[in-house]
Image (cartoon, rainbow, N blue to C red):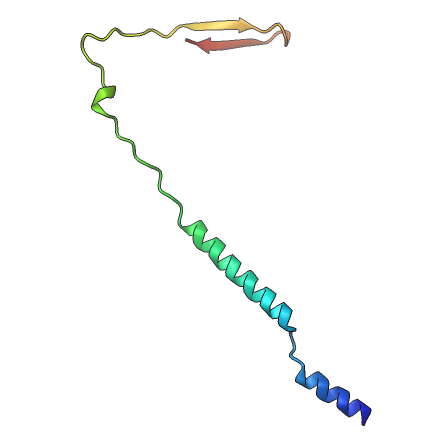
Length: 83
């Protein structure tokens, strides 16, 4: 008789506990939202050149000068820089 009661209780109990089912549902929703956001990558903005950026008459032109710096902190190290 006692074993019969135990079998009835086991049959009535769901195979997956309620908290485990809830956790699986939350995990599934989180995964779906993560993949949905991954699909919607923002497009790179297109910044066309404005007329102000073109060379204009009467504006002096600059020059680029290359120099080399010998490091005193790191021996045998040379750094090139442009101004």
